Image (cartoon, rainbow, N blue to C red):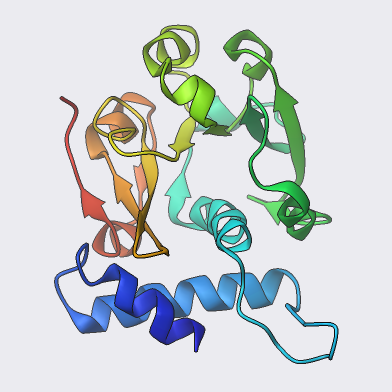
Length: 198
């Protein structure tokens, strides 16, 4: 059921049904591998939008390589929420996880200055509108910037969640990834809509 839902929503973004099925499988497996999603009756249930996005935030790290400089001396892999997190209890899916052979550390930053040293930064809606300010402080420091909202990737974010018909897809800006010294797997690139910086 989840596969069909995600596949339907991705058709506008992806060139073939085969790729859409691959996205559906990645999302479903990421969610189920992280935490069994069960209802009060014990049945497997469909993940919520926030659970899907949190699962993808975790999964994206497996398809992106950071430079040695960005990872040097890091005892933990830091995933930061810039501004108030929209994900609520879905962040519990990240408890006890590891990324790049390091324990995942979830941090909450009220300003870009407080997000220094993070490997992935989710930029909330408030800071999305001030992305230029965020990039001025944190840009070119090996950060995978992820955000919601149309135009985030075109304005310099690396990866943007895109919602179509209630289904989660994603957009990648390869120029922004190169600016950050990130190498994005071709597998992930094939699953995304590609844009450039305006």
